[in-house]
Image (tube, rainbow, N blue to C red; front, side, top):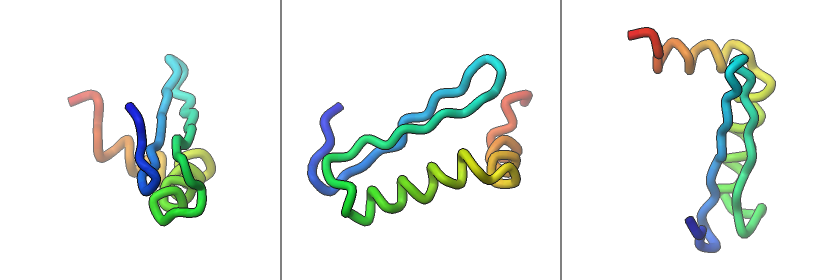
Length: 62
């Protein structure tokens, strides 16, 4: 997948142990899309409540 100059993407990996790693793919770190990806990535990595909320939303056990 190739991104244009105004696009950014989060690349998520979850290990079997449930650890989440996040990378940001972008051509330009000074765009709104990139800033949003950076903010979401920070929440994913640092905010346990946010992680729990997401897991409740997707509830993989159903």
